[in-house]
Length: 228
Ligand SMILES: *[C@@H]1O[C@H](CO)[C@@H](O)[C@H](O)[C@H]1NC(C)=O
Ligand SMILES: *[C@@H]1O[C@H](CO)[C@@H](O)[C@H](O)[C@H]1NC(C)=O
Ligand SMILES: *[C@@H]1O[C@H](CO)[C@@H](O)[C@H](O)[C@H]1NC(C)=O
Ligand SMILES: *[C@@H]1O[C@H](CO)[C@@H](O)[C@H](O)[C@H]1NC(C)=O
Ligand SMILES: *[C@@H]1O[C@H](CO)[C@@H](O)[C@H](O)[C@H]1NC(C)=O
Ligand SMILES: *[C@@H]1O[C@H](CO)[C@@H](O)[C@H](O)[C@H]1NC(C)=O
Ligand SMILES: [Cu+2]
Image (cartoon, rainbow, N blue to C red; front, side):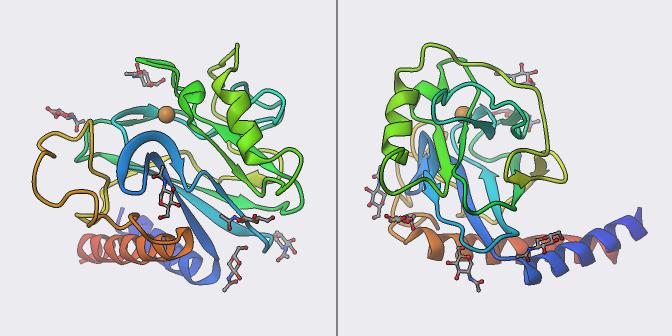
């Protein structure tokens, strides 16, 4: 147990230093709960860079499932799927899932497959890595998703087309103040509001590095305590 924790901590520290990580938040926009990915798409130029999805938004189930431009809400054959992660409430437990992007020259499209109490994919819970700036753009993908006739629950698959994960969604706690506010969070009527969350009013990259640093520091602290 101790040995495993120490090895994980070392692997995590090494990975955090070696990799170029981009954060996508699941179930929020600009620090407010919403059935969206935030940012909805990212540009990854370095092969083997990672994208970490943080499940801390709208309470309920979410997935990150690879689809195609033509069928935004159905699993791509050979695509990845994180599997469902259930966000119990606005205070967690939360999840993280890391993809390594091996192909930076082909768009990677994805969606959330949750369908109750409403269909997340048609509500706008779609995203992309490296969508084209012209032609099959992210906006066209999102428009197709909003009117998709078929939405499919896929099974969990770690390795997809152009990207892979090495594990399912990991349950974790997050530093306080890093989670979104808004509908679905109990007792959010007064207090901090939407201006104080990490994701708000920042560019995607600065919000990402802020979250990553806080998250890694937090995990390091947690492991440090556990190892002692
Ligand atoms: C990290 O990746 C992004 C997206 O590919 C790229 O713009 C940035 O230059 C990379 N940074 C480093 C330090 O590799
Ligand atoms: C990405 O990782 C794979 C497997 O480790 C390696 O073969 C490849 O050379 C790496 N690509 C780059 C650009 O670092
Ligand atoms: C969430 O997903 C899990 C696993 O598929 C399932 O057992 C559970 O019923 C789902 N909960 C909701 C509220 O959809
Ligand atoms: C889920 O949240 C409810 C209240 O919102 C709480 O009673 C319950 O213990 C939580 N479950 C877990 C697994 O955190
Ligand atoms: C990604 O690159 C495209 C050009 O290919 C650009 O229009 C867009 O603003 C970039 N998006 C992000 C989030 O950096
Ligand atoms: C989120 O914030 C960015 C940057 O301030 C802004 O461009 C975007 O429109 C906002 N999105 C929503 C849905 O409010
Ligand atoms: Cu969802």
